[in-house]
Image (cartoon, rainbow, N blue to C red; front, side):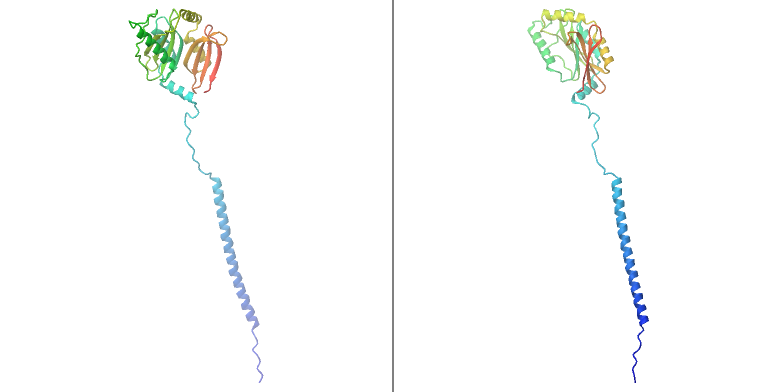
Length: 271
């Protein structure tokens, strides 16, 4: 008896392998697609985050600017001085001239509480002169009396004026720039007859009053008058030198011809 081997079902095996291979491909394809989707999502999310970071600038903190940051030290001092001053320039002129009968102002300065040593020296000289006098009275021909050695002092700003009597005698008058009260009126002890004569001649040549000079100066440079002085300029012309402080607290010095009232010069102090 001959044994015939059973014929192999090769078609079935081949189909089975193909189905297994196809299933594996499907699984592999699904895995690849899932991985690609995740990578794409990550890349997209990173790109959006980067673009958002660029669109919104990083917040920085900067100090708030001070309202007076642009002012210099001198301008700050002028601002403070003017804010505390109540008596105007023209009122100070009237008060100073009223303190010494028949006198005229030749110099006027607005000073703070820390005024210069020159004023203190003048006060001390007058006090020493008073102490040397047996009666304690002034020998001024204008009839004004010197202040006692313990003269009152202002705690705020002052107008310090130099006034000249009819005979050329010069006096220093201190005025409280808040109340308008005369704090002190003293005669300059260091004057000789020649000094008085020259001063009297200068006053006679100054036909423009301090008020007229101040108006001419403020017409040229808008602001507040803080100083005025009668003196000769570089060309030996008698002028009123007027200091005007503007709204930005810069100081302008305007020279006014003391005879004609015309402007002869101007200088701006930016400090």
